[in-house]
Image 1 (cartoon, chains in turn purple, yellow):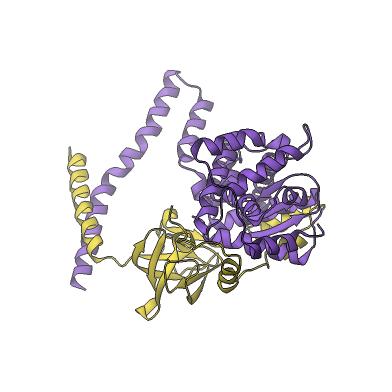
Image 2 (spheres, helix red, strand yellow):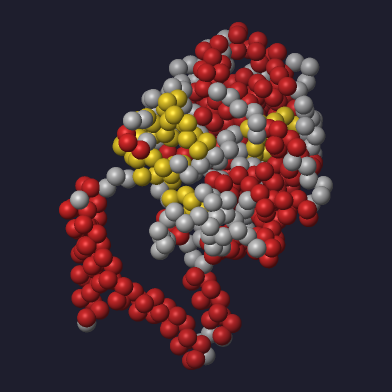
Length: 304
Length: 167
């Protein structure tokens, strides 16, 4: 107890000593900007934006809470589902959720706000999407490129990698990230008023379209895809799968992809390039599947 | 000049304070996800000893890789949580709730339900009537238990898994 009081006392003294100067330090920047304006080095509009800019620094993606990413993810998911039909096959969706959630649990970021969830899309396109909230969609076309559970594990692990590395969130325009975080930070501890909801909804819409543009229309950068491949190799191996599954899947994909198609070909680096990149770091032994594992995989994808 | 002296005194005091806190502090953290579990061992397959929800506070008792050893109030329940489910921020569950001392800074505080929330989602949906969340809601109900995961790994003869969070 005594020690507790001593600490409190020291803290108070430290704060008082520093507080006497903190305003001085803070105003130095503002003062410099004002002097600049008066001397005509910068216009007053520039001065305004510098002042605003200084206030808005350090707004990084880290400041989005898992809850914010979850809500962003839900709406990104709804946009993906406005373009693709769901393949409502119970056993197959059960299977990819068991496989996918087991992989996610063993990953570097097992706990996201509402967990990882997987859904098969009824499309022959070769494609997959992951939202920042952990909603992961895989088309039938992509599953057909997988000949083993090890290959499918690699596909799901690649998407989990995108979530963990926050690739979706990084496709939000910088200015919008700052805007969103500034609104959220200034919002008080009270219920939202209608004008605040309107303002937040505008920013939210912008965030959703930045991410879906990147996911559906433009694709991520080549380096993001290579990073997700690397994350997939690490993750499947951690669980005991053979990363060669990823190579086998990419080879099958290379044979199936149509140039200029509305799928992976447009939004991903060529499968051959991805294989080269992965194998430049490491080569893997051929896959020998235990029969029980191969059988359950065959059963799950049968009839697709 | 006085100012420089105050800064020096302040910084020295803060330094002493920091050292004192390392010795004395009981670090607490908050659950930053909807639901999370305390496990008997630092592994995703570890037996679940308690279930926690968003905003619950735990006391930190140690670290092992990506796993944090925690205890609940009173120390009766102890176990491990993955670092991704915890934040050093104090999470206030309801907007307007005043169980946090005034003057707590933004850095220490996260208001649950603040910013992008169901209210904003509802307003977004009004502007985008073509969007249907039925399957988004449905997929969020798919939940796999650690027992099912374990059986799945064993039956598929998937090699001995190493711990989550360890590179």
